[in-house]
Length: 149
Image (cartoon, rainbow, N blue to C red; front, side, top):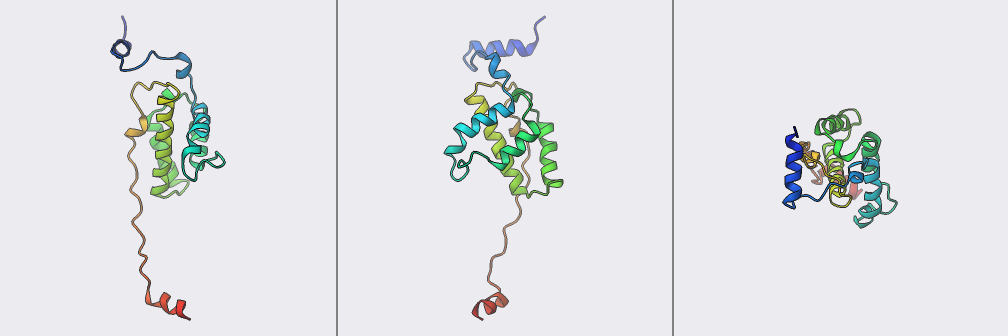
């Protein structure tokens, strides 16, 4: 008896919703996707493509590089996100930047490398932390006096 998932994939292929699955694309590791992202996407991003070494990608590759892209799951990404906040002490805005890079990487793997993720991009399920409140940048009287001295 065939499983529901395979019937659903066949239906989507027949209706043109997804292309035939390329078996080699399904064996794409995150490290392979990161290499492609560094070559094709980073150079197009302002200020980040110069050396091809984005610190966000390095952290992603260190944790998830050996995994096949379709094997990514949101619980593991949530745990990694908490680790970035708690153990590594990154701010909410830095964690958001990592998650945005990660989401773009997965989208690149889907659109450019032909990787099919049955449940879609798992980064869409991750709750982003709140960014820190804006700093008060009003010139205080004591600072004004120091500047005049």
